Length: 268
Image (tube, rainbow, N blue to C red; front, side, top):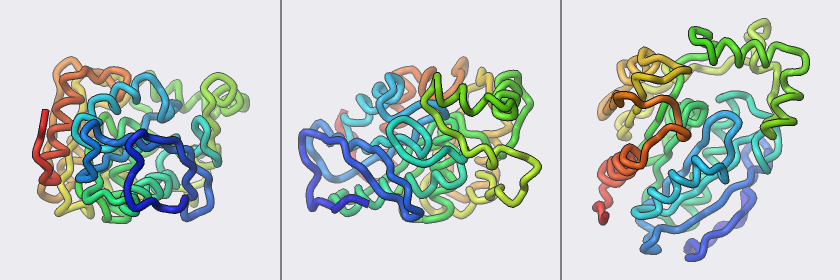
C-alpha cells in the first residue's frame, strides 16, 4: 500500500495501492467539498466498470458534498493489475482503500458498492470488520445465479472459450476464469448472505430496485434477513440496476444515510 499521508491533499489525486495479496490497484482520492476529514467513503463499482466511469463519477459528485471519496478500479478492471475473481479476492482491494483512508487521517470510513461492488463491500465488512457503515446497492446475495436473461448471458459468455478475451478487448476487464467455473468448487468463497451477519453492529443499508433485470428482490431480502441489527432495506420503485440507473435523488438519500449512520451531521 502507498505511504500514508497524515492529511488528505485538498486537490485530489490518483494513486496506486498494493493489496495484502500483492495486487497493484489504481485508486483516486477526492476530498469533501469542505475539505473535512470526518468521513471518507470507499466506492466499489459494478462488473466491467471502473472508478473513472461516468456513472461512478455521478456517485462521487454527490458523495463529495459530505465526505471524502476513494474510488478504485477493482482488480482486473481498468488500470488495476490482477484479474477479477467476481467478488472473492476483491475484498483485499477494498481493504487497501479503507486502510489508506484511515492512515490519511479520516475519522470514519464507510463503504458503498454497486452490483459486484455491493457483494464485495458486504463480504469485506463481514470479513475485516473495520468500517463504520456499509451500503450495498443492487448486490447479489449468492453466487452463480442464472435466473434472469442477463445473468444467463453473462454465464454463457464466461463459459465460452473466447468470452474472457472479448471482455478484455471491449470492456478492459480481465477475468480469473477458474473462479467462474462450477466444476472447481475449491475456488468458491463464502457468499454475501453467508457473511452479512458478521457486519453487525456496524450499520448496513441494502438498496434494491423492483425493476432490476439482473437480480430480483429476493437477493436483497436474503441479505437483509441474514443481517444483524442495525440494517435497513430500501426497495426502490422503478429502479433498475446499479450505478448506471441510480437517479440523483437516490444517491443523495444514500449519501445522507451514510452520514447519519456514522454520526456525521448532514450539511446539505
